[in-house]
Amino acid sequence: MEPRGTKRGAGKIEVAEPRNKVPRPAPSLPTDPALYSGPFPFYRRPSELGCFSLDAQRQYHGDARALRYYSPPPTNGQGPNFDLRDGYPDRYQPRDEEVQERLDHLLRWLLEHRGQLEGSPDWRPGAIVTWRGHLTKLLTTPYERQEGWQLAASRFQGTLYLSEVETPAARVRRLTRPPLLRELMYMGYKFEQYMCADKPGGSPDPSGEVNTNVAFCSVLRSRLGNHPLLFSGEVDCIDPQAPSMQPPTCYVELKTSKEMHSPGQWKSFYRHKLLKWWAQSFLPGVPNVIAGFRNPEGFVCSLKTFPTMEMFEYVRNDRDGWNPSVCMNFCAAFLSFAQNTVVQDDPRLVYLFSWEPGGPVTVSEHRDAPHAFLPTWYVEAMTQDLLSPPKTPSPKD
Image (cartoon, rainbow, N blue to C red; front, side):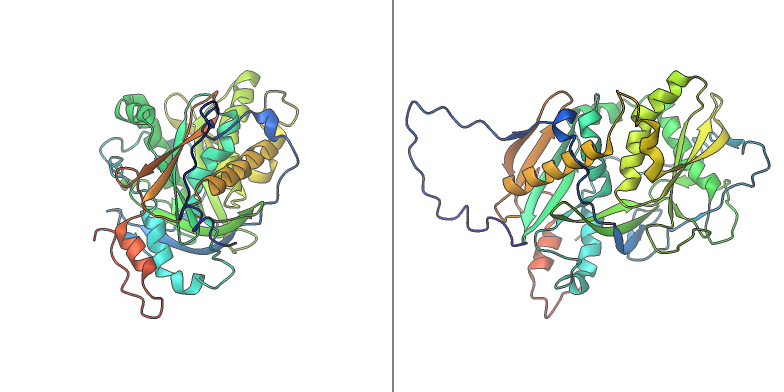
């Protein structure tokens, strides 16, 4: 795929429009699920290109040191009885959410591997580079009724980069997060601590600190329709007993949810929460989600495995359920919309795609701070001659 539109903005001739001509409306993309109910689009089986780790201080390391190993409790007919409140808040070190990381960790990985990527099938000039979480939000958009989003997009050397921007509403929600919600967030990380060991065959150690700075991230390539994708996402753990140890099929996603007691509660769970679980795990090709169901006291009473490829079966006959084809078709339509909108190759030029539930995706154009998100150290290093690659700069430079 050739870099788009590098000449399109140059030498543009301004033509006076007739006075009676109606101004062309700003482009937008509708999100109504009915518009995207066609056949499931082509999605290439994701393959892992590499990985990186973030340590307890959120420092980048181009290796798998933060990878943890799935180590479930013995199945003796009783619930695991994990206390998800244990250690809160004394042994809790949450990540500083005021720090805007954007794509920086993924860009650091790209810089370190640009020599092997360029000229290989894994790197295409027209590729889309982003986080898995950003694509997850796109997949769920046709069915989302509460939270909007903003995605910033820039084209550089033919590649389209997508980076989420915190909406004003999301910032207010984060800064006014009630204590119960903060504790529920901790419980999700605590569950991982109960279910993971530091080495294969090891035992989990729930007595330590829960530090959400630590992360293991997989870097994957795929293709949706005619859009090559290179994205990264955090991985909870690897299953040493998986049938195949080839990533990403050996990875496991861990989730918690409240215990449910009625068909209505289960139906709501399948319609809403399971959609997000499916989108998050389907994109990187993670085959299973292990859910811990907690009681009101914060103890895990039961575990249940949800195979990613079987999640749709829970809502297939539900008129108000979700459809994977709609999710993927909308995502493909958005990527086409973004590719066709962001035509000028300029890392300082940013197109901000905005969406609120009930409306279409709209776009606005910006330049430089505060919207530009490709850091100077990345742009300069990628511009250097490949024959004499510089030492990879630190994102702090």
